[in-house]
Image 1: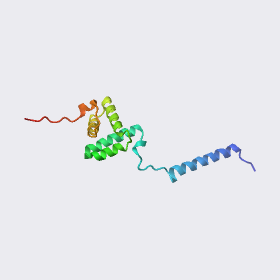
Image 2: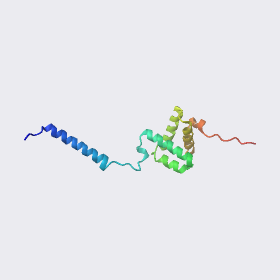
Image 3: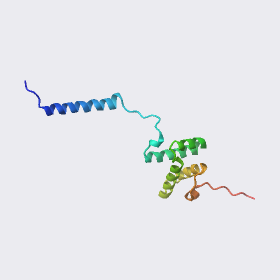
Image 4: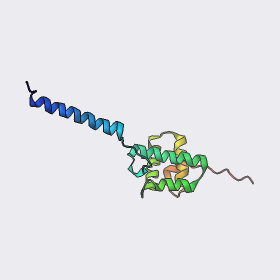
Length: 127
């Protein structure tokens, strides 16, 4: 009876192990993320989250809910909102999005002079 060389057994064992590992990880017990905390998001997704908060606030005007969502970003949530806003102003991105972020930042008490052109102007009083 001819025996297969040892390297063949090693390669066969590795192939079976990798195949079982992938099947278990992807098919039988895949990782599912639910209710993830926004503090663990990558920077680009945190930026999107901040913009979504401003979009939601523009639609429902619920300042308490917007503040809660900003707080979910962590201790630096309000500062991060201001950072995203300033970066968008400097890159001169979507003006409507900048206006929504400016309104939210202003309403929660964050201010920078760069916001002035995007703040809503009050109508002049007629005598």
